[in-house]
Length: 171
Image (cartoon, rainbow, N blue to C red):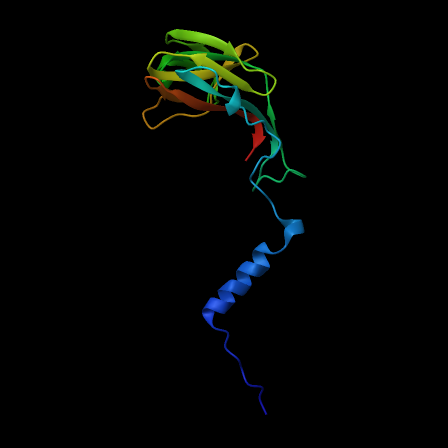
């Protein structure tokens, strides 16, 4: 005599799969980065930009695991703010996110603190943000118009800019 086959309804099979997949806490991996300071409380300007500078180092493949993966740390860096700058306005180091010269107007320079926090008063407009790494400048994001690490400041508002230095990270 053959044993009778029991069909498991699809919704129950789905729920069982979810419980099994996400129920194992000791093997869970997080993409959150606990321990980084929340610096928004430090903002004292009425118009301009503020943000954080974080240095990424190590292995972030395939997801961030704080026990075995890389580290993300707030860092002190000089931040150079230029008028909105496209890739045609810089002298780039091959296929990297490093630049030897920025051929757009320098608006200001500010330094992040030990928590990675910086702020700068700016007039309304669009700006590009670069960090100084040794003798070169670094910025690794571009918008769809080709502007490098760009942010827009509007009248009577403060724009948040996150600067991530990722050249020593693997993804």
